[in-house]
Image 1: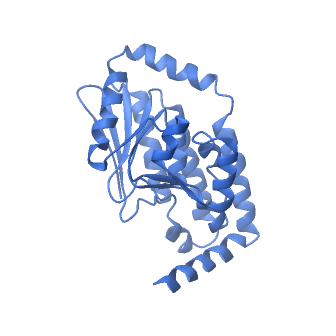
Image 2: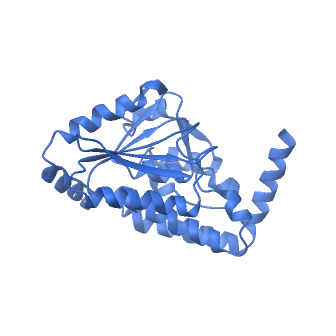
Image 3: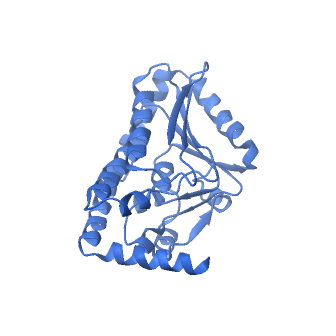
Length: 251
């Protein structure tokens, strides 16, 4: 698994997630994303961040296999803390974060993208929060930043996904482009931001966060409490076993 961070000469920092096969991040992976964003915040030469991924899709959430192969609740608590740290780092990054989304973006991926400042996506990208299928809750806070309230509830309760091209009409996704043009599209926006006075942009980021109507950190932490309750009750394990059996029967 690799989380890389590269600062270009123009002040654009590119943070790339690559964890085959589907970019489902381990506990350490989430903390590595948080560290990369913290580095961007502290570096005054960084003017804007592009958060992207290599591979089939942007992000498939947490690594469920890691939880299944870890006794007790250590992996669950670690994933909760790691996701919280990563989402918070994106939101609180001192410079704007542009999410360049390719393919699938589900679960924890929505947490990253929902807290970003600008979203561009490939025309085959889609978003979803299938947590109810796994006996968990989370990322509704961040999906709420992408779709209207009733759409959020429908997507959350049904575990359906929504295409990036449909999010353009809501204004949450700036534009969709062919996958091979995604990085160019993200860099166009990043270049525009990087051309501004960094002191002003950093102040603007802090100001915009300050007027947000919802405290995303507190809201997401509230959601996480229900995930832990469901795991204590054994509901999550039952649903994961059922889901695993369904997937095997399809093969």
